[in-house]
Length: 245
Image (cartoon, rainbow, N blue to C red; front, side):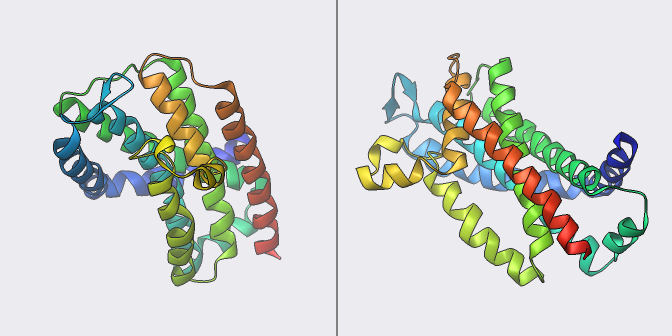
């Protein structure tokens, strides 16, 4: 099982290595724009809980980047399914559904961690230094695991790239802006806060931000991320089995 999962993971890493020189600049664009637009515009004027807005913003960008890049593995899976027929070859190979999902999820998590390193470097260039303690990396690990697991399940359900774009527009984009990434949740109306609380990215941004400031994240947020990730992973295994049928 471990060898099968590693084979799937290794294939994705080989593809990632070939595209890395093009991916790194693309990973820089959005965080750099947000740091310039929001950071310079409000960074020296706004203080949140004793921290500058730039210090508040960077953990949110890390949470958002780990989400979007972990979820981006779904596009790679779709290319393999629709154009290269790799999924059909995997069906014929002695690779279990669990191993396939594990390999793809690990690949998505790897993309997320590489993108986060890019964001951290950009933050350092902007003069923002965070506390990179074990809680910080645990929150990122759980967040990337959750969205990589979600990505595999969705990739098995969609029928085309157009469907994939719809999923990104209706699932990922709203969370990127409403999950406490750019603004404190307390600024939203009470009814909106009740809805936003159920978004996984909300707990990821809260946990990562707390760890970044040297505070232990809420156990509830970490538990929600972990349990939701396991649920999505289990659903993805079922989706792979259904896609084979």
